[in-house]
Length: 504
Image (cartoon, rainbow, N blue to C red; front, side):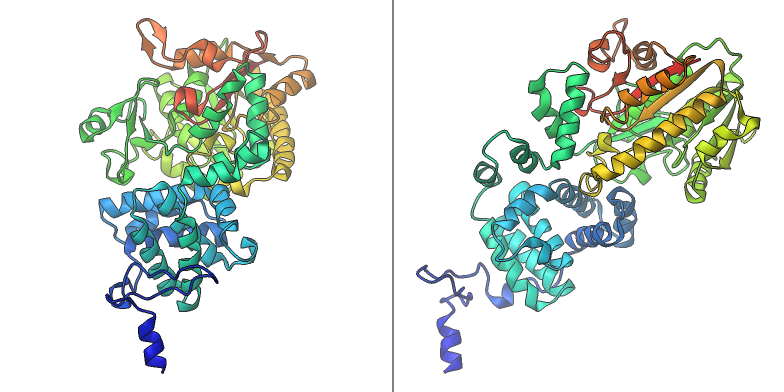
């Protein structure tokens, strides 16, 4: 009898028939059991492993992914697939969770974490990648069967079939039809507190409120790889011959679409570095601005992992200055030293110290001609590159970070020589971390003045027919007397870097 029942649940091609819900016609699976994948393919397995590291270890995908790709020996095609699958899934987690909540018979928070990560991976393939539905289903179920167990594979199969019944646009029209913060949060995969912060920043900087959706959308576009040839050290030509395109925004910079950065000429040697072009410009703007000081001693107060420090040290070498790269962390300081290894060792030193304590050290009082304070921040300006951070950060983090930013600014003012230059930089558009910090430090210190930050940024950029590639009205605050600058992912194709140039 059991054999007869089993046979009745298969069609003439041997495909298993699903039980279906009461009153509905039973459907057959896409493949017979013998045809289904039994193990996870390397590309999807790698993506799953990275998501598990992000979920369970608070890892950053951009740090884990390259190492995992190399460890699993993925070829170029599989590496590209893994990258798109990983980042796309992390970027859209909030949207996919809203969809999955409609397809699961329990709160998704009660699902085992590996099962939920697998469901998110399958949902991204179904709704946002050029993967046939049957392939997305089959490979995700195989992944679950091999990595989690046979039991959960049935649940995953059933849930993803429900997901596949509508396109992404159809799901969004059903779940987020309006323009409320909650609807926009689902549609653009941003937590509501980040939505409000971006909206507030747009208003402060005088941008059109209608630009709001395009800023959110820009945060969901996979960024191209940005490169810089370290000034006086790296050569850009081999990078361009490899397939990169020269930047139209920053000198000595290039843009590269896809591929393993480690294979790009000069990257392994350290003379070519991977760094967002907006970040490059903030370091160049500090160095390019004119100072009344002799310009002998420079400081990066929070230098790890070393991107801006490498630019500053390279430029210090060409200017006859000495450069000190400081960080509070031993591990990050070692990364800085690795970044600086290609620069003349007589130019730079490193130190491990709390930046606030540095400012309280009498030996550092009015010691430095140029100071870069790239302050610890929420990182809301780099949501394209660190997609998991939008789900990890909270408003409580903001309160802690803004207090630290104010303390570090006060310390920087103490260490700056009269007439010296202090660049306050954050990778965030949140006005509590940017404009308000600058206005508050000016209130606390009567001698501190805000300089022409926009001109410094424009001069750091390339020229186009005699004009800066950075249009002033796209970077400066809408308040004429504020003169603080904000880059935007939709306008400049960079991270949302903030830059203010101060003196006293």
